[in-house]
Image 1 (cartoon, rainbow, N blue to C red):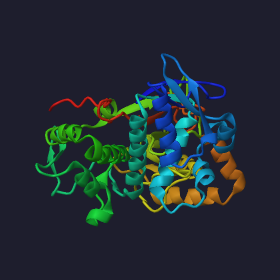
Image 2 (tube, rainbow, N blue to C red; image 1 turned 135 degrees about the vertical axis):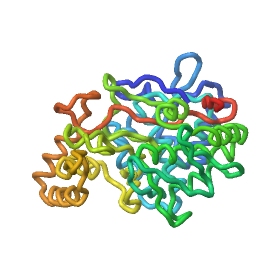
Image 3 (cartoon, one colour; image 1 turned 120 degrees about the vertical axis):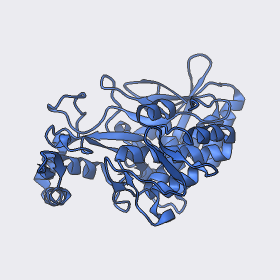
Length: 378
């Protein structure tokens, strides 16, 4: 899956582009969207695109009704106000978000597109089940599945499956225990689990290579981003503020310079869960709305303090108390949101920016024949 440029105006230059533009490809897309996902054909149409490709986009009427100003926060409520099948509802929400996107998502064929939709859904489900202990420096993993090397990081033990090891590390329903993570590393495990589950079903050869690498050297931080993720949007050409695809990883920045010196409180990495909610890896049963996340980060400034070693720390109880006060005062709440729901300042700048990032991250294609992962041997 490749990404084109963000476009202004109606968004019809965005949507989903398929490299094939023949009758068979059109019928396959209709079969998938209508037959598999149950999306009425009046919601989208097909347009010609450069280099004999085709572009599938929401009609202007559908986008204005479902995603006004590209906001996807109420999309699930519009599509599936009551659904007993969350997996199906998530895939519908992902697909429509992509069809209505202001940026072109490019796929070779419908199979690759459907795989991408499934991976986004798998990431959502993994993120919703994730609960970890917040430790920015300490880290631990279940010893049955993982061993630790000072240079190589946490390594998958021989004979263990990657998906099982990731679930054991992040989902207390599996082990009954919370393991220490930073929010950034937790988001990596969640994304990797979504990819591993898809690879198990559709690309076992790549999974074998990935697991072999994970037994010798962890893929983490910048390498993780480069190997697994595509990023779209930039400070010069930002993604619309309320445009999120379920399964996206994104960053909320702490715009307060003082409290951002507390380790782990520079910002917050989250997964968009769909349905207007964002992951909360520390309190699994209390996912955030966009407004709740912005208000919490604003009040980190009230909980920041220096300990006896003059290291910045965070008093979460003070943060919680201030959040409650703000939520109970409509005037203060409105003022805080006006301050926070702006595009963030550039790196190193603390001026008038808010906490919203200009970009989003999604996993690269792993569909056989079109897999874009470049997993280097250890």
